[in-house]
Length: 112
Image (cartoon, rainbow, N blue to C red; front, side, top):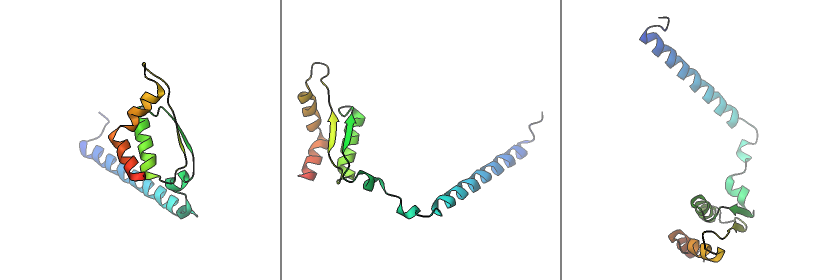
């Protein structure tokens, strides 16, 4: 049928996988050999002293992001959270819900 035998197809796949592995190794070596690679700033250094503005902070990912910023980047500047009234709840009521979450209580204990 022109597709070759099963053993030929397996050999072609293995050769392709080996070629991909060699390419990945070459790319990794190129990055590691780049002058100044060891001086690239880390994420922690990038957030140091920076202010962060978050929209959607009352949603699941917003809460996770705020928790992660406070826990992993203690030198972050001010975190501004945009909160709007929704479904008959005021901004203050929505903020109270966030501050009463178990993770919020843990963070309050951790930083005060």
